[in-house]
Length: 600
Image (tube, rainbow, N blue to C red; front, side):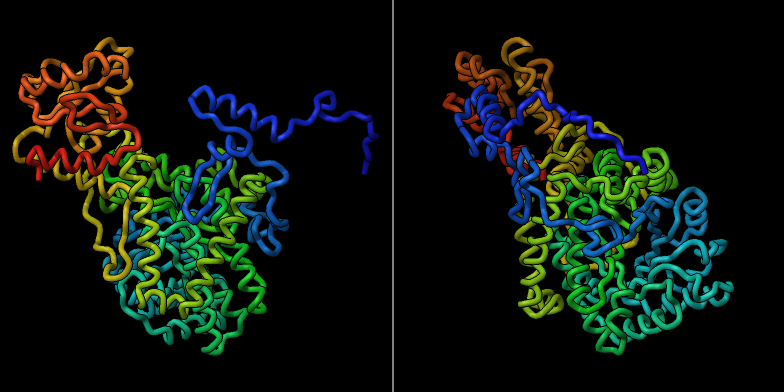
């Protein structure tokens, strides 16, 4: 080994180290220009962002913000990955979901980049009796199969094991998961599920099929009910611990029990939060396994979030799922499922499935994302966020355990209430467009042609609710669609621009986007009488409002306007009924406007 001599050179030696106080003074100077007089730590706080779970993202992280030592890839606490080589060998497992008995679609996926199958079997999915036909032509010793069979997990598992035997797949060669998830089933349906047969499947896998796992610890029900990242983590830990208790009580060793679990998490378009969540999940489970006496890594299957998928302008979903898949890969997921962009509309077509599977292919083969082990590791921000999220998740987990475990938390309604409280707070941000939804609450396109798909089988129901970010705006748009179908036109509002373009363009664009988000067509040309509208909105600068707003509002009322808005912060302008501005409750404003227009 050659040792380079010390040449006495130090990077940027001629510059003195900048201090945090110097940076804060610079920030304070910038904020002063926008009218905010703050200094020191207050300047830093002014640029901080509050997340769910009481977490705050600060604008500056330094070496003083580092978290506990994350360890090495492949070693406890597995923050940096469950395997020493990460996903560098061949990338992550590209797992495609299928809910319809379409063997051609299954083969097309496998021939074009998919490496494992996630099959929804039973009620609302592929009939158990059709499993053999769906897997016709599939090399079961090469393509792992993950079942999602709900109440029919026993019969689906027996059928899959029968297919292995029938097609000569050695027991050592079988790979995948039988997908039993009693607590997840109860969370989805509200119906308890007997664990005894699941323990039997686990025992058989442990003794006969070393490459098969019997159970899935699915955190999606809690994510889809509106839960935060920490709540998703805490619920998954509580589920995993409950499974360990049941399996060891049925005679499995703690090591065998841990080996039977695969964990499923959601990946959102908040890439750093997703990366931190997956890293924190491995750390937390490593702690649970250590306490139980069977140290080991968590196996993660990550799915792009159904909550973030929109029905309007669904093409934007491609961007959301790409960022989510990138975060899943960078976070160290073992398997990644990219939901097709038309997932919220029904069964995906061939194009949507192709885009979904190619998302992972491009990230792995062209962007080379998997060539770096834990690419976000070492970032002060990511390490700190991972640590803070781990503590928040552990706290939520302890709360569930103190209430008697996950089953008790589900049956008492405690977990539902906790998730609902989180979603209620987030709903407020969505309504005020503090959390924008591109194509829905921001930059909506009323004239877009709807994307139509064959309806998907009904999802299990009766338990925790399933929420979507777009649901409030979707309800408004549905009212507008019904009005269009009945009358041949959408409800309209006249946007009255005052002064030159330089004075009104910004607020005209803002108001146009806001009203379109509720399905209300903005009319900017011609007079109010020609617009066919009953409502109007003034758009201009504050200076021109002082000069012209009162008279313009009076003129609009004389022309027949029943309600006059002003785009801007509330002020004292006679004749103006309401104001629309950044941070206003857009959903409430739009709903009330549709009510006044008689749009039911």
